[in-house]
Image (cartoon, rainbow, N blue to C red):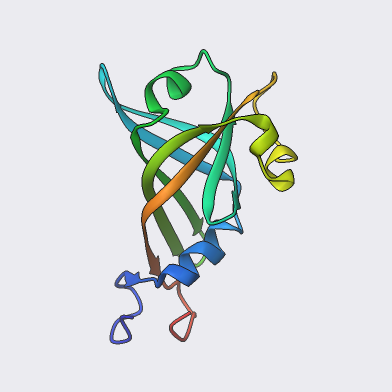
Length: 141
């Protein structure tokens, strides 16, 4: 952790990254599609050591990501104090049949209208995070 200057980004350990991921519900999923890099926001949840989200089978996200490498970025910022953190999860996106989905994933709320019948698990190969301390914040966590 960076303790010399609280305004410089501090690298977060994996445990802290997972705790922060559990505190939010919107991620941006990025992948390399046929037309270049694509990024879409999704609701997500964390379960069984993975990041999970739902979509429809006909979406570009479902068609282009299943079985491929993707990245998910989750951020939080406080505009008043200028504190912020960002966590990036990279790994392989896997389609999971509904009957194999943990109960907490099946109950995940989705903001976008319409059903989201396809469950995708982002099996992580790497989890990284950074934090910027805001004005008046002390300590390393």
